[in-house]
Image: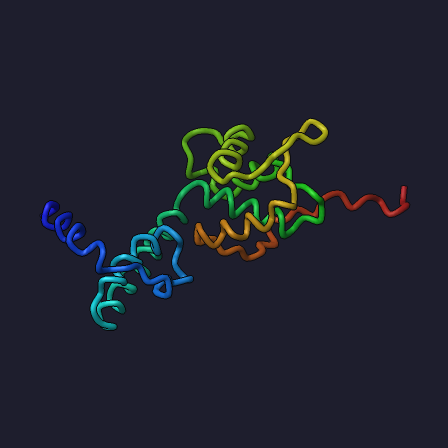
Length: 174
């Protein structure tokens, strides 16, 4: 079968051209890269519609799988911290605390700042830096976080129970 497909490709390589107008902007680039040649050789609209449906189902499946990864959980906690904070940075320690509070029971190993920082830098590609002895994620990374939320299928709703009130002070009373 593989040889027959390869032979078909060699025989038809000059006859069939990729049609860039068939790219679906709703699909991720990798899915479009796979779908475009298939759509270009599809002979009628009905077949193209079926191929598009398969591509959309594949993307939905990929997003659902990504949503179950630890990266999605870290991203969810990070974006909530970014939305609820008025500081210019989000400390990695705060993200770790949020992860422990929300997902700590799901992991058999302890969740540490180093582990969360590694996920932020290596898997999610956030730029962290040290500020006053603490690793932080700058608010400048918020656009990237929002884009990654779409990619991982993370939707954030503000949970008022998870935001801390902080120290309100004494208001001048002794």
